[in-house]
Length: 473
Image (cartoon, rainbow, N blue to C red):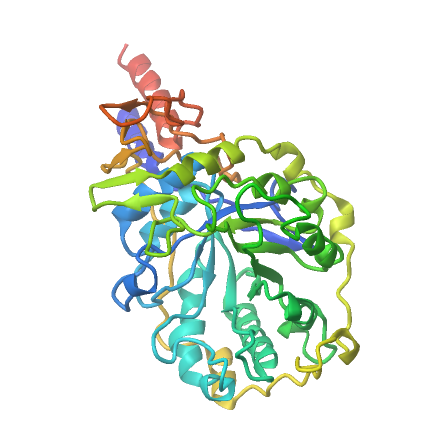
């Protein structure tokens, strides 16, 4: 009887432990369990690009690919991914649970490149309609709100630019308002909603002020966080040459978390990522909450860290090795230390005085919510596809992995993080060793001892074997 009871407990060995859902506190993301400040050490994740996406396939619908990529990202030191295109109707439970087990959070764009799947910057009043919300925006919220590692939702990406009509900023705030009100009504926790802006310096200040300020009559339309797609640091640049000093000054008094939602210029290759040390420095980390490298997989635009050769093999490119070296230099204790001054900045009240460019919208009349959208918020969408965590039973990846010298990397696997923790550089490296012939000198970043933690299952099974042995005696 005892033996059967122990076996039933053993079934829990593969149960996925949940990372804590982060909260926004002032201008920081915070782990509510440990009270540590959370800095995004992330990568943009859209294998195949927009052409690799359809209603029947997205980056979080392929369990085997997710297990492979989560293990590789975990070994790199990633704690957050951003995914641009998702199909809300698909089952994402296994992939979301795998990334959760790896201690990796997800920031998700609620839009898609399909017809009617995003806000049209040339005629936002036409795309702002009930079908857009029911089939895309609210459906995405329902699909991903059940996962504790869903860090936040992007309401838009670079919708405001030189080609946008004047009214676009107000419509983005309207989408944010509707998303936040839907979350408040139908989700049991607050999930932050924000905007990802292009680093167009002529309108960046106005864009940030417009999204960050607070309206007395529409408090929920304000962004909860602000992402910046910035590629100003190219090659072995510097803090001032890349204009990082200007960006730091711009956002030093921000009243919400600001981070690089894309960075990693590839005008000079291979990329050496010296900007990582600047972004997570004492000075810059007071204004920014980290950033996401563009991007994980090698596509035609040549920004990849990893090349997917086939379903069976991948290559860790030289950029992967260079980025890992930069991450391993980071002082995580300092980066994650809480700072009370970060939480004390209050939002500025919206005013036309905040807007300096005469062509930028300087009024804050947020479009009225349509009655049909209000009904969706009141009642919820019909038959929502609600995601939930599932057990992660497999941690060994079947894929053959090669380093940038063409040598096989052995031993890569996913390590399940401890409860209430997230991944960080050096904490969960699978280690492994390179073998076979290649064109390099054999000095691979993968030739390191396993510095990772054991999975919860391994710990429990070790305990179980001891108890069973004692019982049999």
